[in-house]
Length: 141
Image (cartoon, rainbow, N blue to C red):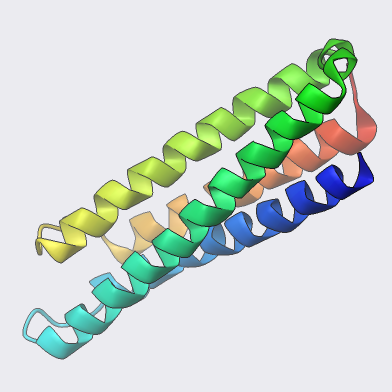
C-alpha cells in the first residue's frame, strides 16, 4: 500500500508541475510579437513537450489512484472527502484536456486571449491542489 501511495504522489507532483508551468508558457507565448516566427516555434515545441510529460504524469496519477482503490476497496467507503477529491481530480483532468486545446490554438496562430487571462487560469490548479490536500489530510467529512 505504501508503494502505491508513494508512486501516486510522485506522479501527482509531476502532473502538477506541468499544470503550473504550461499556462505560464502561454503567458510568455502570447506576449511575443506576431512576426517572431522563431519564438512562436520555440514556445510551441516547449508547450507540446511539457503537455506530453504532464499527460504521462496524469495517467500515472490515475493508474496508482485506481490501484490504491483496488488494493483496498473499503477505502472508497471512508467518507465523502474521497468522493469530492476524485471529483476534483476529474475536473483537473478536464482542465488539462482544455489546455491541450489552447496549445492547438497557439499552433494554429488563433490565440485570442491575453496574458492576463493565462495568468488567471494559472491559479486554477493551485486552488484545486489546496482543496485536494486539505481533503486528504483533514478528511473534513
